[in-house]
Amino acid sequence: MIGQIAVSGLAMGAIYALIALGYAFVWRTMAIVNFAAGEFVTFSAYIFVATFITALGFPFLVAALSAAVVMALLGALFSRVVFARLQAQRPLVSIIATVGFGIFLREMAHILYGPEPLLYPSPLGQGGLQLMGVTIGWHQLLILGVVIVLTLLQQLVLRRTMAGKMMRAVALDRDTAALMGIPVQKVLAGTFAYSSVLAALAGILLAPLFFVTTEMGGMVGLKGFVAMIIGGFGSIPGAIIGGLLLGLGENLGAYWISSTYKEAIAFVLLLVFLAVRPQGLLPERQADRA
Image (cartoon, rainbow, N blue to C red; front, side, top):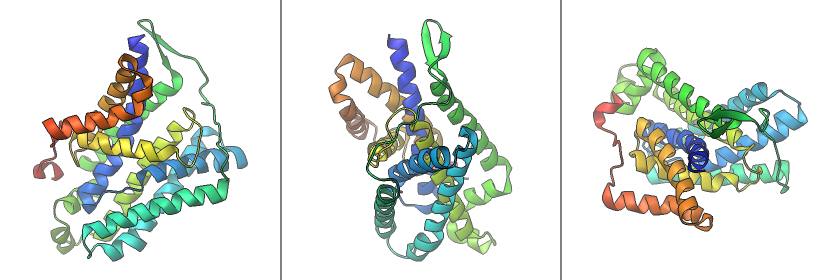
């Protein structure tokens, strides 16, 4: 029983980790918090299920890739059209802009797709892998697999490719990177696009677990932010660990205490970490950016 609950918690924690990664990337390169992340999750789930699966009849993988491309374009558009014009202002102005963009996305989802919730069963079915008496659902395996593969790929890109080196240079010192000829605005747009893809993946993976509604991303986005704080503000490995720990702690806490308080457990954990270890489990160092 505990094992089954732990597996479910880790799968949900992996989704929190994806969102926390998006927060961390945007913070490291843009020095703002993208509070539209939850609405990116919602909007991506809608266009994935309602547009690419239901209306156009795309297979799962093609629909997922199409939704990710749309969200990447939206993220890049926000960076080039809105953030590029606001970055000379105080960071609070850009943060407020992300809140406004999130409201815009939520209302667009409501206008385009209506108020009715959408149901999308997992294309992998209801079965799973039996391991030591615990059933790991195929969709849960998919979620965990996506996070593992994505983590390995992004480390490879950041450390081994020119694009990754430019992202690290901009994160370390934006002005110096510009003097070295790095196209800073394009790098920032790419970073925001990538964080949007992470949120899109979270929405796509979340869609078969819950009804798709205009409110589905709000709480998940907040919990992704909590996961980043637990792991260490701006820390990429911390975002992953924080997300997994949050999902695990949330499920185990609901089992041991009461499922009534499940939504509150994440924020209790946040308060505990802020009181005991406010820097998080793996705090970002300036050297980590390089």
